[in-house]
Length: 294
Length: 332
Image (cartoon, rainbow over all chains, first blue to last red; front, side, top):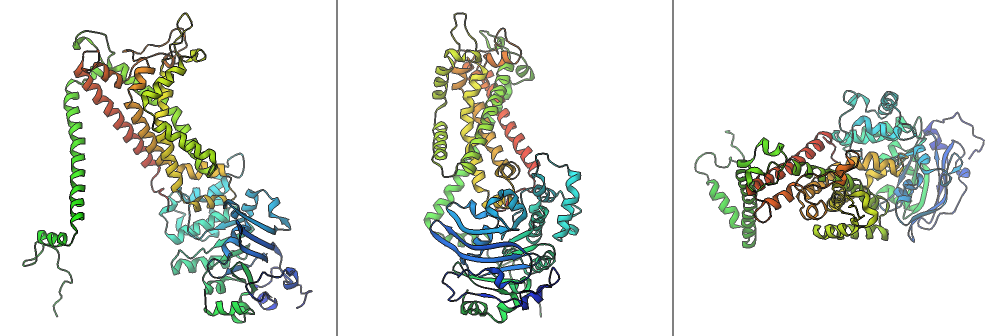
């Protein structure tokens, strides 16, 4: 590994994929040994850093001592069987686990070097916004769904004229503008499932986040809508970092730059997407990727 | 090859079994208990509809025959004979005032309490205490509310809210006091309707809002309240109906004076709130053969007007909700 590698920023994602060595943890179900992440990852700007994070519900740990970087302009895919803690880890990134009674975490999560615990939670969630598994637009118009994200950020409410361009740009980024621009006052719940999910993405983009968290964003959608959203994710990666939880290995391979495989709360393997699927280092990963269990 | 329809349409063509025969065959596979239940459900439904429409028809016939614009628009007069007792304007105004005052208290209190219990106090002991307290209020007969209300409203410090006699004795009966007591009748209905609505809003809707960096207050104001608008409306309509229909509180706390008697020496509106009066319910009671008045036909007419007011309120509320909430149903 060459620590002085100085590539143009942002580096071409696939090249990083080949250059980086994976962090391998074996045996897979034991707690991960903490290795400083910069050993494993020489380049790329770290937007967020998950450092030795353990998340517990009551006394039961759901995520055990996980260390992971979340880099700018790339997609990090979290995979693993149900109950492996990937969604919990995702929800901890914007402190959404705090809403669950009894949940707590140890270790540090930082964004731009700043501990997320020290940020006002509303600020953090605007920088790290989220799209959920189930499309969940609010029961209001399409315009208001996106405008709501921007609206309540200041004492003084911005007027519609001020909001309109921002709403438009968010809808454009989510690839929904052409389909809905003629009727923004339509109730959002009248849209199709795929459109609703893109509206939720638009809503999450409207707050101009640095990191976008996606919790199985396509699992409730048909294949065609899934394709549209995957295309969108590849597009979004150019301007922000995306963390996506998915059950779908093909999807992780298609959209992920790096893939983290979790099992029973442990981070088993973190590697460039290509390598994790073609040459997994840990036994567990090999079995999971091959479809032996999961 | 000739095309043969896969399924012959029921009852069409010749030779097929008749619809009755098909139905009989279908029912022959049912269990006896299901057949009895099926018949019972039909009978119960039809009976209820018959009773409701029968009552309505009876009221309409009895009430409308004596109803006239003059009756509604003129004030009641004391008199020995029915023809001298004037109209029901004051009771109509009294009923509307009661609904207004009662709802003005109960709506913010009920919605606020429900929001607190579900959104802020979840699982706390105090929240459970609030829920049980409201259940107690819901189960309290209005006559009990009324006499306790009177005991409180006649205390010296309550003098501001009703007429005070020259010696300093507090009368303790006024529109404001009766309306406030009325709010206790509507409060549990508004509370539980709002609470039910909030409980059915899926959690992922709240999380979607929090995940955008919204505060809980903004989430409640802009997402949750609009989502439970129809529940609040239903609860309010029910509460208004109960307020309009209550008699005990009127008789005890409003003074049940035939005419509206504003308090003396008070600015307008305040004199009305401190004054006494009657509502359609107390009017019906007093003029029915059971009461001391002597205008049974006017009692029927007043009863019909009361029914119309309640129905109109219900229609108005659901019309407003439907117009504003088009297509805003939540995904569950």
